Amino acid sequence: MQNSRKFALIDRRALLLGAATLACGGSRAFAQEPGFQAFVQSLWPAAQAAGVSREVFDVAAQSLTPEPAVLQKPAAQSEFTVSIPAYVAGAATTSRVARGRALVSELTHMLRQLEQRNGVTGEILVAILGIESNFGVATGGADVLRVLATLAWKGHMTQKLSEEYVAGLVLLQQGVPRHRLRGSWAGAMGMPQFMPSAYLKFAASFAGGAAPDIWSSQPDALASIASFLQKSGWNPALPWGVETRLPQGFDFAAFDMDFAQFRALGFAAANGEALPQSGPASLYMPAGASGPAFLITDNFEVIRQYNTSDAYALAVGILADRIAGAATPLTPWPKVTPLTTTQCKELQQALTRLGFYHGTIDGKLGRVARNAVHAFQLSVGMRPADGLATKAVLERLRGG
Image (cartoon, rainbow, N blue to C red; front, side, top):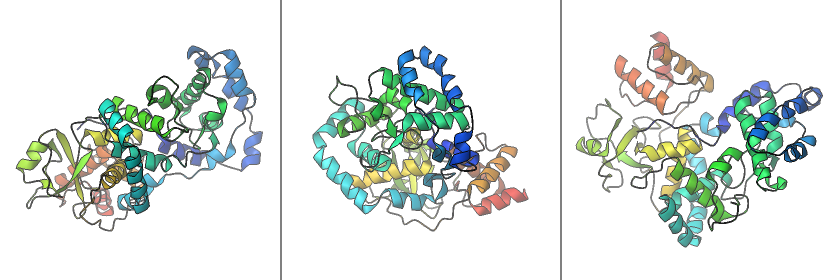
């Protein structure tokens, strides 16, 4: 398995943490705080270097005011705060599966063309469209330049968000109408919820020729998602993952192996079909050893570049499988109580002190943290060593 690459869609979850900690006092006090226009004007050298004319810069900046509400958003998103079973249940609903199937049927010819071009199945593309914007219905109405400038001015990711603001100006310079730059409170635009920089890198027109329209064209939105995944390393020879059954007597010693090695140990697909012949895979038990188990591939990590949450990537994969007609997962979900963000940070800090974790202390438990938990469980004899961060693991870390 490859480690997560630098993702081109800015980590929208990180914005929430900074926004919530900086919100204070109410909109009146915020509006009186000086410096916003001075900050916006300070971005001119970067905009000029990116090819933005002074006229485009000034027209965009002259009427720009801060958006106080953007700094008062909740401190976390559901994919990082609810249990994975609950998140998947909310993302891969019966109604969403039905709408996804209807869209795949309606756009069969187009989706086949995209699969031939980019190697990504139509069900994956439709699943991402469904989760990101409810198939293009919920794209957001915030002024992208306004919220990006506000977050860059008062947030904790000033450089990255300033770059996104400049990327938005580049879109204007290239002829994208100002009214098009509307989206989520974090600056994500259109049906695929692309940040401005992601649009510049990955947006694609299905028919070619015209500028990609990710705001009102489903074909362009789906072509852009396919472009993102392909350019991020999608391997058309592998699925995103396969639900599996753990063989009797499995010792949980290794999670990362080739499919051939997993088969040799007695692993099989939960639905009775054959596992892929070869390719790197990683055993992933999102609710622990008593719940569904998956052999995930590098394509799972590609989906995580769209959104860094394991819950999100799993929901996309499961929704895509269900749209394709599979009953996934076959193993029932056990009851899972997730650690709080504070507890997750404590766990990361403890694992860091012991030399097991070498990632960011951010309260987000992805593959790096999961492997660290697994290694700790093995080192102290906790069984099953399933990599699940639980209160029992945290208590053991506190005691040791």
